[in-house]
Image (cartoon, rainbow, N blue to C red; front, side):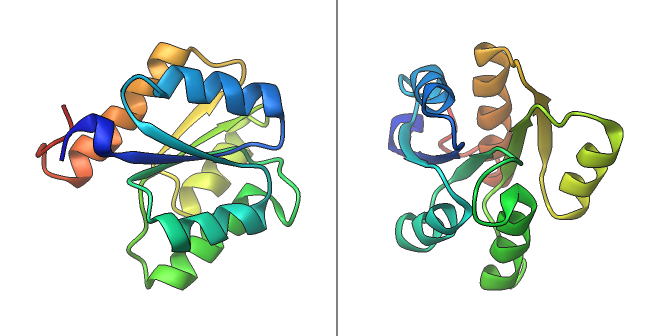
Length: 132
């Protein structure tokens, strides 16, 4: 599977940030964007993304609720998640990691770093196959 065939789910309640992340990832990946925790969980079930970019401050329970819901729904086999949040203190980072996030980027973030982080997560999960 090529990178362009990989699907990344973006969940952020701010439309401008969803668009920025979509533009940052769009050349390399297909992108599906949602704004709430419920939409994110429904999209994961329907679309089966290869990776997730998740904000912590989203309606419907927040990003931590999405991480918990992913783990419960999948029996522990979830797509890799990078949290991108303004809540970038050590406590929120630790909480996100404890709930299953593989990476954490503080807002404002570097779009190139985000794309590289997503690529690395997908590559690591797929054993390097088809990630490039």
